[in-house]
Image 1 (cartoon, rainbow, N blue to C red):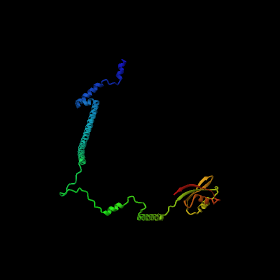
Image 2: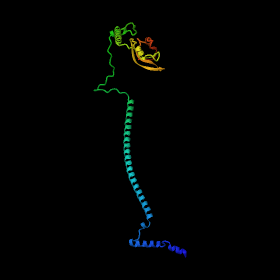
Image 3: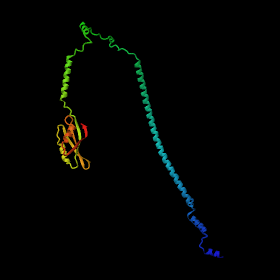
Image 4: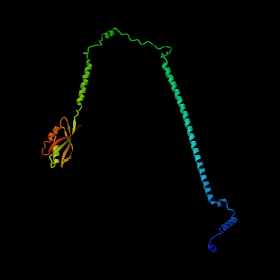
Length: 270
């Protein structure tokens, strides 16, 4: 029997369940029977997890219930306060309505009530007769008859005319003392040279050498025109009654060696 001989040489523990049972009985005699929790540790761990989860859920529900009850209490107090305020406002509105209705009734009564005369003071009634006008004498009646409502316009009050003339003279003298306003203008001139070799410093000196009553020279600058040529742009303030643009152009163009032309770039009243 070669198969049986082969199994005899194999290291297989056929009696392991029997030995396990014997070991279990030995420990049961020594320590007592094992509790159900130790017999099925896997199921016990699941049950413990479930119990913990239930406990956590109960705790959370208890916490939310406590907080919700506190919030409900706060809401109730607020609602009560609002109700009290609403009641007080209703009372105020009712009082205002009653006062307004009383005022309306009084105004209506006063409007419908007839005008009454003043009561008697110290047993004497007020005098209802109008005050008597003083009697006019015959001289006053005669003067009124002589007064002509449609009198002639030639009759002028000499005193009023004299006062009028005096006031006109005073106004004229006061107006003459005031200094007259001088009309001035700001002029911007473009002075062009002959070519790019023209001495622009000398050109500006010639322009500023023009001295006229009512003329005041201002700032100046050189503005490129093209091909290396620059023009002189200069500002001046003039009195309109004394200096004009024609006069300026005429005086500046006298410097024929430096000035080709003069143009008015800007003209503004001051």
